[in-house]
Image (cartoon, rainbow, N blue to C red; front, side, top):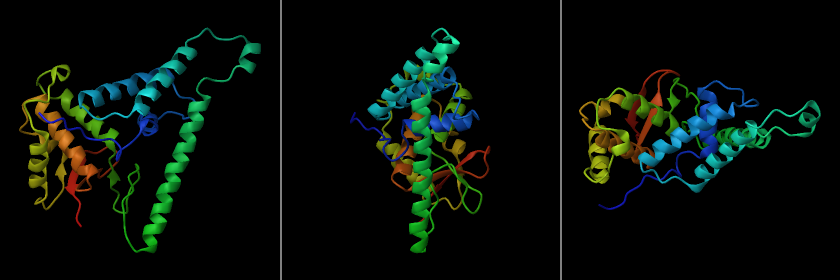
Length: 235
């Protein structure tokens, strides 16, 4: 079978994943519990590998960075004198996250300003609400939804999945054919109602990612803790 991978370039990077985990766990960005974040970050990496996503090297580099910081945090507590001289191992990472967060927010504001000058409306890719209260879903929100779906499906083991029996290209066409004529948004879970194996479930998920990346579909929530909805992009 032809190797076909969904690229993450149009989605998110490792700092986006860390910010997602910080928001999801309602953590203080200045006091990140590294053990918890490292464990959850590595779980996302594992899932992305199982999904056969084309993970950039920067994701793996961040994983190594987190494990290094975690190992330093596990060292015996320094004395008061040593504590004054020793910098918190998390400091550089916190600075990177804060600067990246500011950059992303500034980029969204600039894109809004430029588009408003052209009298064009756009929904930002960040976790922000549009005028109707809808919240755009990013890659990690969708992975969260997939994980929840997998937990409620009595199908074959995720670790034993192979991608040889299902054609991703066919699923992309099938999913688009289904959604391009839908007059209303479709619940994320409804895309998988007739699925009997994790293999097919994951292929449908990959097809969804590819159509979102191509700007043909969008995923969103109608409220902060509600279900995800999928709809075609008019244009």
